[in-house]
Image (cartoon, rainbow, N blue to C red; front, side, top):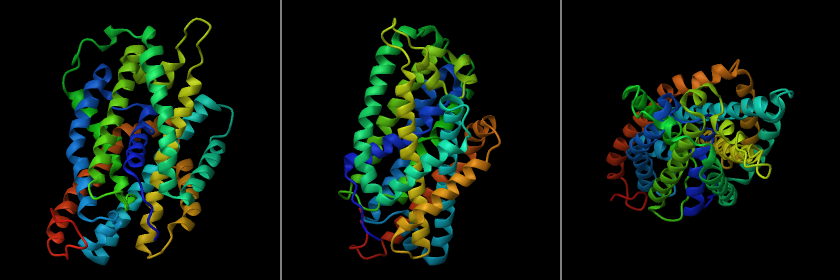
Length: 368
C-alpha cells in the first residue's frame, strides 16, 4: 500500500476540522445547558490522556496504522477480529455524520427536496476525495481551516456580540454538578475521543513524534473553537432555546442583524458546517477502506471507495426514521456505545503493545 505523507500542519488541520465536524452543527455537551462551556472544558481535560494513548501507539510503531499495530501485537486472527470491530465503529460513525448532514440540509437548506438528493451529491464528493487519498485531503484542509477561523472570529466574536446576554450564563451550576459531568462525558465521546479514527489513517507522519504534536494541537484548537461556539450559543440563545433547536449554531447566527448592511450571515455558517462534515465523513470512510484492505490483504484501498461510500449512503438513509431519533442516538446512546472503542480497547491495546514492543527488533519499533 502506497505511503501517503501527512505534514504536521496538515494533520493538525485535519484533526481540528474532524473535531468540529458535526459537533459544530448539532452542538456539544448541550445537556449541561448554561454550563455547556464548563462541560466542554472538563471534557477536553478528560480527553488529554486518551489522545496521548493514541499518540503513543503511533509513536511505538512508526509507519504503521492501527490495523498494522493490531496484527503485530495480537497476531493474525485476534488482530483481524479487532480490526473488524474498528472498521464497523468507523463505518457507523460515518453513517451518523452523513445523516447529520442530510437532516441539516433537509430542514434548513432544501426543505422541499427529498432527503437523499443532497446525500448523493455529498457522497460523490467523498468518493472523489477518497480516491485522491489523505495526503490531498490534508492539503485541502490547510485551505479550509482558513474559512473556519474567519467564520469563528468574524461571526462569533465580532458580529454576535450585540446579540449576547451575559445573564444567560447565570447562575453557574444552577442544576448541580450532574449535568456538567454528563455533558463532559458526552463531549469526551463526541467529538474528542472520536479522533481514535486517525490512528487508522495516519501511517506516515513527518517524524517520530508528530503524532503527539498533531493530536495535542488539534485537540486544543478544536476544543477552544467549540468552547467559543458553545459560549456564543448560550449567550445569544439562552440554554432553553438552545436545547429545543436541533442546530443551535445555525440558529444563533441567523438572528444576526447589523442594520441593513450585514444580515443573512447563516449562509457563511452553512458553508463552514458542510466543509467540516465533509472532512469528517471522508476520514471515517477512509478508515473503513484502509481497514478492509488490510484485513483482506489488498494493496490499494482506493477501489473500495465507491462501494463503501454507497453502503454509507444506504445505511444513513434507512438507519434513522426521524431527526428526533437521530439526535436521541447521538446524545443518549452514542457515548455508551463509543467509549469502549475510544477508551477501553485502546488502553488494552497500548498495554499489550508496550509488552510486545520490548520483544521486537528495535528497527521495527520505538521503545522509549
